Image 1: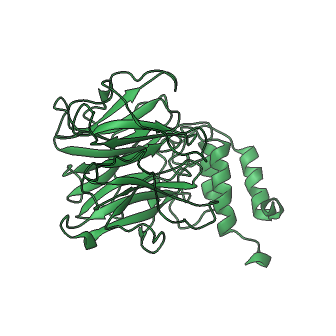
Image 2: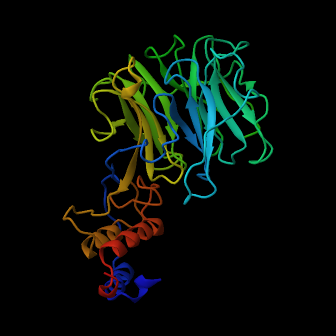
Image 3: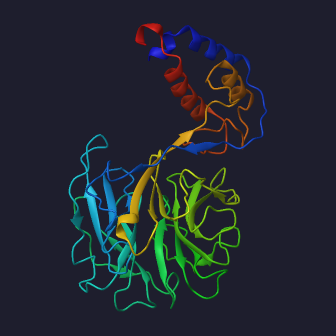
Length: 371
């Protein structure tokens, strides 16, 4: 690799070897890039009818909620690509085996398992326990069609609306929002758990007042590593108006979730900001906005980069000062320098963070013959 030949990086390695000590206490931080309208990025997704439900963990399938915008007559569709470097192909319906044959039924909120063989979603089809229930469908391989859906039963579903399921990457937690009357507000976020991927789901539990308010919380989503949780909240104190996207973090899977934080004015406007989804590689936040529910021309889908902050001392450059700060924080948790493998860190400053730092160092300190 070229950075081993750069004299400045030789100094990096020297500092790294010479200055490993304990220190640091600030939280890792990241920011969002300027949102890009998906009309210009994935034009096959029509915001007047379509919104992103989830991406497969290999990044080759994107499941779409498609119908009359956000009305309750949606179907599930999918777009595919051959590799992450290729463009997305045409929209394809999941067909009558998965989607209800009744055009007025709503099939929505898809979330796919890490192995790509199980798909969760909610539906208003007959035979459920309430207005909207959560269902699951499976397939034998990624090349096979999805099989007939089955209702997740009374441990997950209630006689109220149970919607927007999100399965964790390990398959052991299923988050969703529900209007059941025993919560904190009109709609709360709940979670059902199981001990193995073949075990039965335990009785769903409310995730608590740290997330749920007296109004509405919707559309939970969790990052691939299980350390970043996003959701949308209506009229929550500290927001920018309407419905906002919020996030909460935890240093490790075994730690409790931290208090929610608003995703900020680049993501949230005075309109309805909804359906947050984190890409499997942790680099992109997808979301939808609505300014006027009665005017589909105001409905849009967006993507915003999730940008790690490597300039630890905020002096406008990534240099040896920042490296020394990283090394001084080596082996600690909850530090400003915990920046890998994803932007929100993994609870400890270690080689993963050094890898991220080196990648940014390379970008800012290219050898003269390559500039």
